[in-house]
Length: 302
Image (cartoon, rainbow, N blue to C red; front, side, top):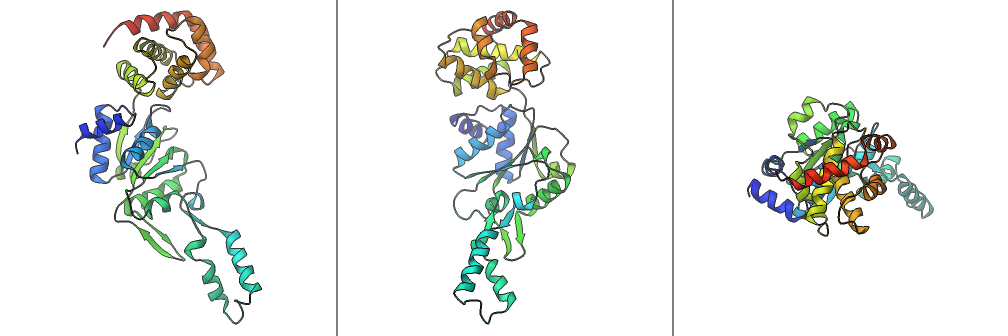
C-alpha cells in the first residue's frame, strides 16, 4: 500500500484528501500510530474517521470528549441495576445462604455486568478488522483525562481491577480530532502523528462538491465553492466548512436552482451560515456582490 492507494480508497468512499492527509493516514496505518487531526470546525476531521471505518470494514467507535469526562463515561462502568436485580434474585432463591460476603460480591463483578465504553470496546474488540476509534474534540477534555488517554494509547491496554487486564495484539486505528479551543499537551502530541487540516483549495472544494453531490452541475459547484470562499474572507464568527458547502449545494439542488442569484442565496443562507451575526455580516457585505464574485471566480480556473 502507498499514499496514492490510500488517496484512491478514501476517494472511492466519498472523501477527497490532499496529498499531505493521504500520507498522514498511510503512515498512521503502517506504523500503527494514533493520528491527531487539528483544524477549524467543518474541514472534515471527523468525516475522515467515518470514511476510514467504511473503507477498512472496522467498527466506528466514537468517544465524544467534553469537560469533566471520566473513566465511567470513556472506559467502563458497572451495571448497578442488573447487579442489584441479580443479588435480590439470589437472595430470593436462597443462593446466598451460607456464603461469605466476599463470595457474594465476587459474583456481582463478572463480565456480564460490565458496561464497556468506547476505549474498552476498542481495545477488547476481538476478531475481525480493527475498529476505528474516533476520539473527537479531545481539546474539550481536561488535563487529567488527557493524561489517562496518553497511558491508554501508549500501551493499548486497560486494567479493570475486578477482572484483570484487557489488551490487544491488533490495536485499533485511532483518530483524534481537535478544534484547538486549547492546546493539546506535548506528551500526547508526541505519541501521535500530526496533521493540520486546512480548508480545501477552490478547485479541490469544487471536486469535493461534485463527488458528494453528483446531481450538482459543474457550473453550480464552482459558483457555490466560490461564494463560500468569499464568505470565509468576511471575518465571520463561524466561517463555513466543507460540510456546509456540501449542504448548501445539496439544498440548492433540491430547490431546482441551477445557478446562483440574489434570491437563492438570501433564502438558503441558513444551510451555510449558522449564526445571526454572520448573516448580518453577509447582508452588510452585500448578497449581490457575493453572487457577482461567485460568477467571476467560478469562471476562472486554477
